[in-house]
Amino acid sequence: MELHSLKLSLTEQDLNELLRKYLPKTVELEDLRIKFDDQRIHVTGVYPFFISVRFETIWEVGVENGHASARLASFKAMGVPGNIFKSSVVKIVEDIAKQEGWIRIVGDRFLADLELGCSKYAVLANLHLKSIIVRPGTLVLEAGH
Image 1: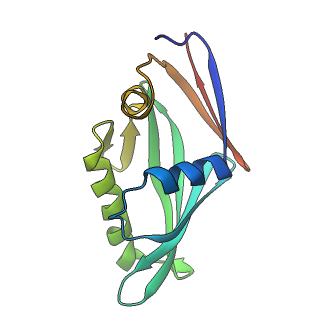
Image 2: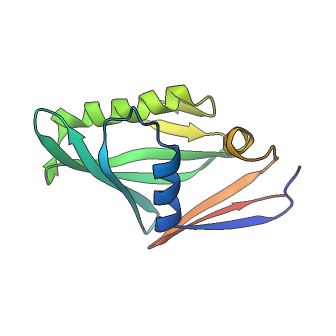
């Protein structure tokens, strides 16, 4: 299957439901939630350390050579910049990425081959990803020739 034109809108609710459905049960994060603002994605949750650590990450997203990209732009734990906990939370994301053959880590970015991801979870398709637009409440993927 080859897409000639696609514009897919995902709400925060859509993505949160997908996260609950597909996030491995072994992931040690609680109350995980996604929220969109202008060109960034906020991911909040609780990391059970010695105490429960509430965290917020902010990701900048885009498209690089037809792949979705995400870079961690900001990290806070318990309301303050949390470098002590940052490596623990980022390691969880890295461990998930390593289990998924369609996500790879390049420097400080995660790159996702959405064509491979679609083939694993839905259908085989040539997407030709063009853009990812993040607006408050909505994420829009545009693909096709």
